[in-house]
Length: 246
Image 1 (cartoon, helix red, strand yellow):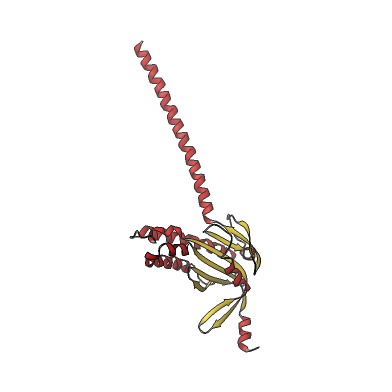
Image 2 (cartoon, helix red, strand yellow):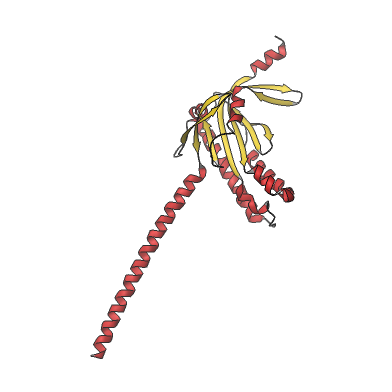
């Protein structure tokens, strides 16, 4: 075995693997090809805001069209709370950037008018990677890299979610007040993968529904009190009129 091969083997390490994918990109391109200059500007801004959240010890491997593949080596300084908080910051930054793009748009073209159709899917896996060099390019390989990419094609029928494999979930294991649903993905080549899925919008929608329900109840009570008050006034007025006529 040559020295280069020995060096490559020494670069095998444990890592968290991440795949951030802008959902709706293909349809966005397909539907709005005539105004795609604006579309590319929007996608670039959304990718940039995600890249801005990636900082040491998290490292970018490559940009894959509308997605970013990145990783974080797992060592003795591994901070579970930092990773957990960072996952949700990606969604927060992405959605805030969409709001900004919506608020400053000066164009009504199909691309600029449909920024809300773009969502974020974030997939997290944990395992072994081999980091190697080809000319000036650094590449990642290994079965777990393949697994991460396979998981981007899954059976989840929603376009915004955080999907974490069981191995990654046990590594991070710090998710305070976050609801996950257990899930199983099946693949012919890599087998079954146990995962946990969180839908960021479900909590918002749930709290929104609860708030609407609460407001409806309050509105109904106010209306009933107002109606009762007016009814009493009407009765008193009629009594007074009756007394005057006597």
